[in-house]
Amino acid sequence: MITFITGNEHKVKEAENIFKDYDITLEHIDLGYTEPQGSLEEVAISGAKYACHELRKPVIVEDAGLFIKALNGFPGTYSHYVQDTLGNQGILKLLADSSDRYAEFRSVIGYCAPNSEPKIFLGKVKGEIAVEEKGDLGFAFDPIFYVPGEGKTFGELTTDEKNQFSHRKNSLEKFIKWYSTKE
Image 1 (cartoon, rainbow, N blue to C red):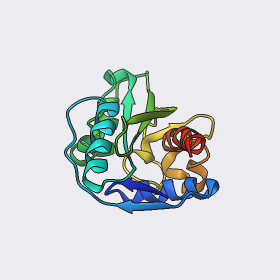
Image 2: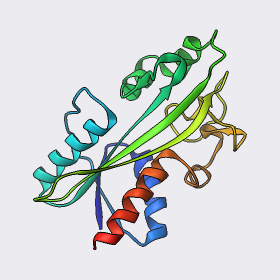
Image 3: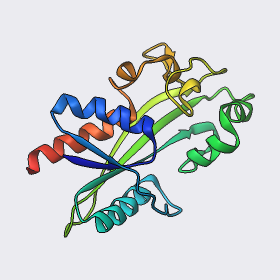
Image 4: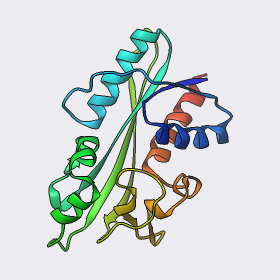
């Protein structure tokens, strides 16, 4: 069993769908923790260390962000705040005059067990920022993140479709492969 620390039910659903393929049970605990100002990796390490210390058992946390090339990686680690303040329409306005719409979703899993150093696992998926919102599936920036190979935005993909290749799947699978070898 793995304990996943998050307050985001969407992340829990995605993770459960991925973990079930590996016969790993996921326990979900919403344990708030302070996120330092820093990289996704720094946030994941800090959260995992804190949760492991508080619960005295192995845990994973996940931090993710949308990194837009034309905006020098913005919103990046501030994705949650930017989603709450500017929203998808604000991002589309910022890119209104930009021909470079390249973007990446990145996900970092932080794992920590008692009496051990934390480990991190990075996953990402490449795409573009669409010119308009499409789809009402997923959450946050999903309706504006267009995946050329799929011909759809994340907002047009079901959780199962998205889980075939998403940034979260990539980071969780890296973690699962490592975790499976250590047992």
